[in-house]
Image 1: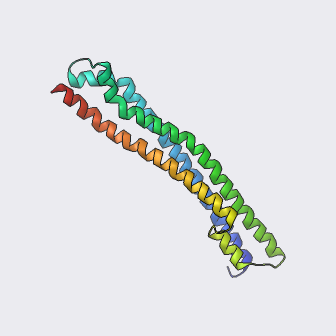
Image 2: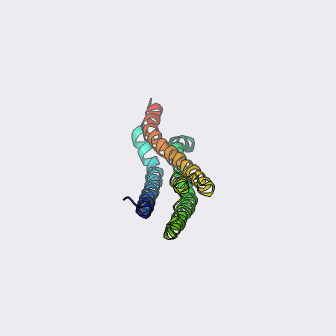
Image 3: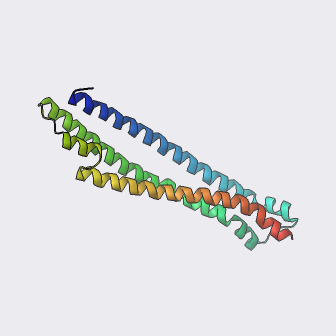
Length: 172
């Protein structure tokens, strides 16, 4: 890999693998979010029976609401993250499309035997102004989705604990 063209082509393949991995991870995130909502939905459908079995009596509407609150919040955050992930995908697509276009332009320049090492480094390290702005926007959107997904997962864990603790508090 001693020619500039080979270096640029190799980097283009690396970026394509990064795109494939990002798309795979985004799909896994969506599946996880659907499961978070499904788990919470199952709990919501069965909360009365579960609560009555643990407490030994029917729960009041207020007690049921308090019991299911973490599950409802988990579903809300998971649904929000799911819908925000579409915007995140659009921003990531814009970033990668522009980055690959700049790499292709650089390859075309190589055909004219022009190799600007500094410009290529700027593309590689996202220092080209347009690429840098798109990358920052994409990263910001991804962080927002990750925060909502993490909150949803945390609320599921709290929901499991609360589903055991709250009925025991009512039983005493």
